[in-house]
Image 1 (cartoon, rainbow, N blue to C red):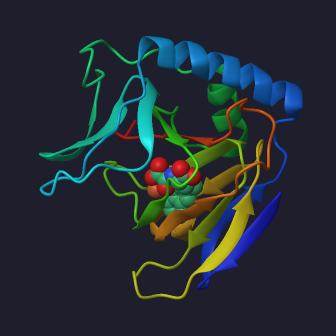
Image 2: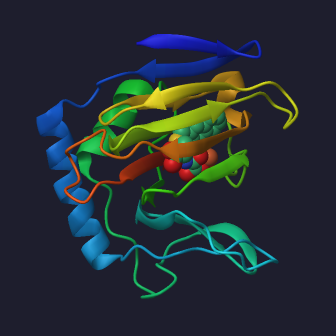
Length: 207
Ligand code: MD3
Ligand code: FE
């Protein structure tokens, strides 16, 4: 476990290789079963309707969605109207190991990046509680991840996130600006057609 300080903010920990290859394959099988029930869809930006380059789904009691109306958490898939599939035990277990005394996660956002997909610099602030961390798991191709400070203008640092890596964004870093600049094609054999999956576990409501 490595604690990384950016712009003087504490609370960012990096756990490279948390999931070994077998653990990554297990998790991937479970994600495949989840997206078979709750298909990946292409969200759009509020107001403009501009599509995201990342496709998304969710598991757990709540899922994060974005549409023309805004960003929110909701208990059902926007396309099927069905409840999100359950969160895999391996993810609840991970949260128990790294999230300290935070109450259990309610949402797991599944982001799928094709080659060329990216995620612009943003803050995660649609949750009703910032005391709990956000916990991220990377699967598939390596990505360059950028983290800044609490202001969009703060300087940023880049890191590479590899398949099996976990990042915990807690404490002062919870509201840091961050994004994914690019996915590096051909860096992992986990997904047979390439690309990257990121899972983010979140607590949305106070206990
Ligand atoms: C740093 N996802 O879904 S995960 C997102 O790889 C999101 O798909 C990225 O940003 C991805 O909102 C990055 C790592 C992450 C998540 C939350 C953070 C980094 C963070 C919150 C504060 C600072
Ligand atoms: Fe984010």
